[in-house]
Length: 589
Picture: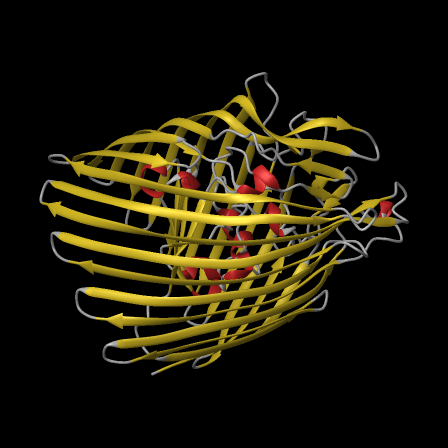
């Protein structure tokens, strides 16, 4: 597990959490582009190079509540204000036995800062490319109740997503504006906690041309009750989400001087679910048992302006599972065993076992584990067709679930001022769901979601953190050789990636300077479109001006390096240099 504290989160540059999490080895969205410019349907997250897709192979939870899109599995990163997140826990490696099929590649858990006192916060930042951000948060703490809420509004004129030399009359900057907010009520007691939470998002995006655009509205309601004793505990969780995604797709002429709307799409969806978990603990033995349920309903409504043809496709997917985890041992050794029996709908049933062994020898901890996991196709993969530029990707209602079998060994060396973690892993993926190229020409590429026979991922990840007084150095590295059985590289996975950061945190000043680097990767399953490697430098500064008042500034892609993030089939570029500066005020009593 990698844990990022609130202080570590604030050292990283980025409007949204996805850009800040790129310092974690193996974290990636479907493409290299930021959520500021990426189409929402490609914001699925992957870990350890198992192959990103628009549908995440990683579960993202916010205060224990799943937040992956109910229809497609991607993540709306605009929902989370990084300044309101108190801690992030990232578990790499299959976690299906505890969390179900959405955790086939791991789990990212976001935790809102706990209500410990009444406080009020506000911030305003402005930057280049017509960027403005304003946010506010408040907490009112009583003897038994805590009421908190936050809101964030953001707008940017964006940037061109194709190189200057090929731009035509149809090209525009990929702009974005969104409003996100949440409210939460906590009922407090010494042993029990109950919270009710509501959050909402409304966003509009331009997708880089005159006619392409999309928008999303969503609302989510959740409740969580937990009771913790010395030897036992109980957790009950329930949630409901409703949303609608709308998008326009176009065909673009070779000279990029003419475009025509091909499809107007609307995708309403809703999801509901819950879980119940009990815990028992003894001096040398621990037991965790639970059950969960997740139901999603959605459909894609497509209209062709040229023909007037309307088509709707979709369905209902209901999954439920039962899991058990135990831990026991003697002395420094601990044995972990877990299992899940899962019903994934359409008569599909899965058994996901896991086992691990860990031993602590002073500052050194040795660990190893074996696991098996799976992922059922999303409604998006089964029923929704989409177009990106002149690349058409077809749905496939005949998709079968994909599975993963993996093993890993590693060590953690912890000292008073530093920590080193090293992990070797091997994952075999069967029936991997990926976009398979059916035909390719200069004006049109046609792909279809299909199950590939097998892929193998072998890798090494290293994390090192060291502190010297007010100075902190952090570095991480991942090598992941991710290939299909016939030898082609799995698309959107670089073989090498890493990050490094040096931060100074004084009494009134924070300065953090970092770099992220990636080697080449491929856009497609046939390895025809090559995305060269690149490096990006970022800087974050925070200075206390007076009690509660701070000046802040960030720069992303400090050297303004142009890099490719995809082909449609024309090349698409990532974010240029982006900077923001502003003021933040924090008051408490």
